[in-house]
Structures are given as structure tokens and as C-alpha cells.
Length: 273
Image 1 (spheres, one colour):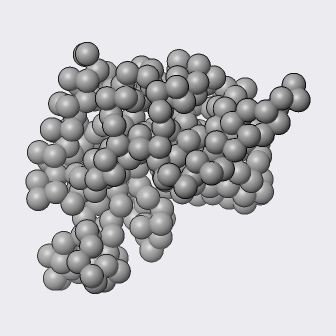
Image 2 (cartoon, helix red, strand yellow; image 1 turned 30 degrees about the vertical axis):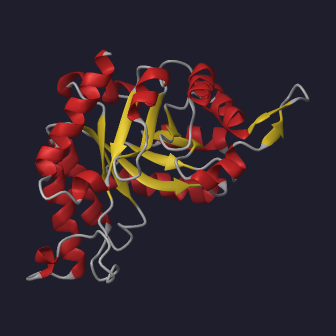
Image 3 (tube, rainbow, N blue to C red; image 1 turned 45 degrees about the vertical axis):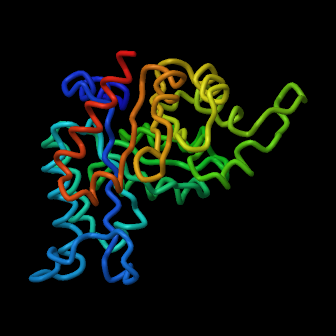
């Protein structure tokens, strides 16, 4: 079953386009009062065990409304293969999609190693950076492992626009913004997903990207919630196949279950407009 089919099945079953971002920040890492996993998770557990327990609890509490979960590999760096398998197994029990947000981008042999282990861990897809090239090769390698790709196209980080809007030459000898070249590579190589930010895109750019990739490509949209992105603009101009990622506003909420339900209901309302 390919990524689009998994996504459509989960979206229809849950009537949801919510993706919950798992960014389990250790409180030992953020001693200045920044948002982190509550200390209660570490009273009788190690740092690693506390972070894992937190992720599993968030999945259980929010799975009813989450079409997907996106695990940030930077926060999950200390996890073992067995830990990753516990996370992806918990996500599968919720009939949701599991995404490893690793922003992979390297030479082919290195990319292949990541795809191998991501598949072993049970993920459905990984995020991929096109800046090292190898987009077509990575698409083939991922497909061979049964994985989907979400390619960074126009990210929510404002500074990403320096590169992603830079003019580059196309085959016709004219120039176009880099994000359009990336979108065309997604379409050319049959890639299932594009990462398109909510805080660093305008209506025209959303429409250009959607037109270039086609209607079936899934837009994974970060930047909603704590980052203040405009979800209404995404619904108006991003097309049908959306995954709206919300991280801190759900996982750091005093009631993650209610927060996930509220975001899901909000997105349903926008979809009907």
C-alpha cells in the first residue's frame, strides 16, 4: 500500500487532516524554563525512558484525531531501534501514518542506509532535503523499501526562503524559484509528499507548488499552532490532500487530548468553507 492510499484511508476514517508533531524536548536540555516534557515523567525513570513514555502517551491520547504522527529525529536521537519500533507500533494501533522527520539529504549510499533503518523501524515515510541532489535516486530507494517521501519544498522557517526562493536555471535556459524546481522534481519522480510551510508561504506560492506537483501529492504543513501560521490560507490554496502538523500546541498542552480534538474540529470547519 503506497503512502497516498494510507493517507486517504486514515483521513477518511478519522475525518481529519491533523498530524501531531512529536518533539519530546528533555527538561534537562531546557533548564531556562522552555517548553519541555514535564518532570513527572522522570521521577522514577531515566531521561530516555521518560521521553519514550511521553511519546507513547501522546500517541494514545491524540490518536483518535491524528491522521499522522511526525517524530522529530533530532529530539529522538537517543532512541534505539527497539524504541522506534515501539513508537511506530503504537502509531499503527491508532491507524495513523508514522513519519520520521529526519530531513535526510546525502549521497546515495548514505540515503539508502537511512531508508533501510527507517523501514526496519516501521515508519511509513521520511522527510527529505533536496539540496544535496539525488532526488530521483532517493525516490527510487525509498519506494524499494516501501517508504514515502516528503520533500522540503518551501519551509516554514523564514530564512529557508533565502535558498528556496533563489532563482535557478531550468532546462529551457530561463530561471525560476528553487521551490518550483523542487516541485517539478517531485512530480517527475512520482514522489508522494511535499513539505510546505504555513508561516513562510503566500497564496500564489501555494498555488504554484500545487499546480506543479499535481493534486495527489500530500502537503505536509508545519508552522500551525505555536509558530502562528495561517491555516486558512493553506486550506484555501493548498489543495485537497493536506496534513497539517501541530506540535508544541498539542504535546505541551495541559490537556493534549482536548487540544488535538479542538485542532481537528477547527480544520474540519475550514475544510467546509
